Amino acid sequence: MLRIGVLTGDGIGPEIVPAAIAVAGAAARAEDIEVEWVELPFGRSAIDSHGDPVPGETLCALDDLDVWVMGPHDSASYPAPHSERTPGAVIRTRYGLFANLRPARAFPGVRATARDIDVLIVRENTEGLYADRNMFAGTGEFMPTPDVALAVGMITRQASERIARVAFEAARERSSHVTIVHKANVLRLTTGLFRDVCREVAAEFPDVVADEQHVDAMAAHLVRRPSDFDVVVTENLFGDILSDLAGELAGSLGLAASVNCSETKVMAQATHGAAPDIAGRGLANPAAIIMSTAMAVRRHGEATSDGGLIATAGRMEAAVADTLAQSTATADLGGTATTRGFTDAVLERI
Image (cartoon, rainbow, N blue to C red; front, side, top):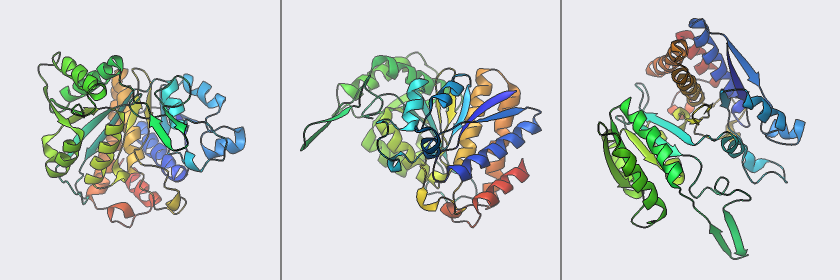
């Protein structure tokens, strides 16, 4: 039996996370795999019930789980006082989820801006300029006076090397091409170190073509010639921005799947946010969280050499692709399907 944690989250979370559970459960049953879904307190509802968006009992439960699905959180609306770290950052830090894998590809039936895009952005997930994850105590932002705000960015050899290995190993399963993205012409020490370490790792993968781009040029190239790129490896902030751009080029952030992972743990988390403005209206696109869950199941299946889990993920991915190809789509893709209607269409194809 596979046990998967469920962190439903805020905003559209209660609509899209159950959709992912339904699709994953149906695909697993088709492969004769039993799944136990372990629902855990998380987000605003956990503040109401436990006084904390990520209660201790949730973290203790996750200690015993290797896979979980996390819905979006709307921490900006949480009542004060609350942690300086977002719920996602608390979990990423505790479990060392250093790799954020964000694919973006155009699907038949979807009006993509870049119809030939098919990239995997491999984003380092623990360092950079993100204030909630680069200090032992406190955050990386501070104000020495009321009129001056500073931020500390951190790049280390260890983190750069391990994310580079993830990227080059992923490229071997795709088109054997990695683009290293940095800004070493300006941030010479920090992103220069990232670039240099990635170059060193590239030398260990002579079967993979490696090139590099400055981040501003990369943004332009993704728009103009996305088919020239396969796997993109970059630091935290650059990866966050480029992956949102790539998601929109592929059609919508509603299709932007991702996983956060370590060597042993994997968390499905769609790239988009909680979208409180459309919560409860049946408008949310569940495709991203469904495909994120498929990615998590696949990654766990590969780590444990479980062909049934890999096949389960394949069923989920194919069902979403087939549904989109038949022009069944939610409003963000120009369609009229509701969240439930899209989910039912995917379930029919399972």
